[in-house]
Amino acid sequence: MIVVTGATGNIGRPLTRALAEAGRQVTAVSRHAAAVPDGVRHVVADLAEPAGLKPALAGAKALFLLLSGDLHATGANPADIIGEAAAGGVRRIVLLSTLGVVTRPSGHTRIAMRALEDTLRESGLEWAILRPGGFASNALWWADSVRTRQVVAAPFGDVGVPIIDPADIAAVAAACLLDDRHTGGVYELTGPEVITPRRQAEAIATALGSPVRFHELTRDEAKAAMSQSMPAELADDTLDILGSPNPAELRVSPDVQRVLGRAPRPFADWAARNVAAFR
Image (cartoon, rainbow, N blue to C red; front, side, top):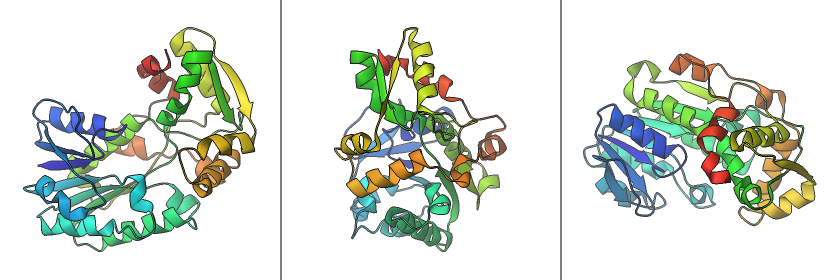
């Protein structure tokens, strides 16, 4: 049995499907009721209360651990999840971390994530750690404005980073859960090229077959919009990366190719598969 947390998200959905198609028994964990593939067990649980995971972890041998935002808050202790998993008989954990633990290690959430990585390493369990950079699916922030006004509005229109398709993260996670060769691996996951917001808008327009205009926001405008859905400190942190990526954040990693034997998918592929969100 393999347990997938965050099973209804951009990574968890394709990961759950891939494991089920590989013939594995899967328990999908999410905070709310949701549809899952046939044959997959679904458990509603809140990772902020690790003891509540016991029903999901019963009989499990492996766990994909994706933390929700509240588990990075002051006072949260996600290390307890690793303890519950070990106590329940889980032998392998694949942790979704972040590239920021090495590119910008001083931020509060990245310090906490690095500590969680260390806890996992010291747990005595088999483990693998995934460190993705920016996600292609963040473009869904623009879905409403593209649908209603045919506009992508973003700051730093000509500054790019090598964003990754969440489906590629899921594929690497599946490999790490299923293949002993990846035990003890730390994988930095990026897309195949640096791509700017302006070029992302062009890729969305191509997928739609209709024009999409790019409107460049000021940093203050972008912060005001982002602060509606995240703490102002995190908005500033994100904008620092988007506006002035450092060399480590611009690096195209070979790790997707190493694990999957193929190059990561370009943003245009993600846009074509998700074009319905922009119609």
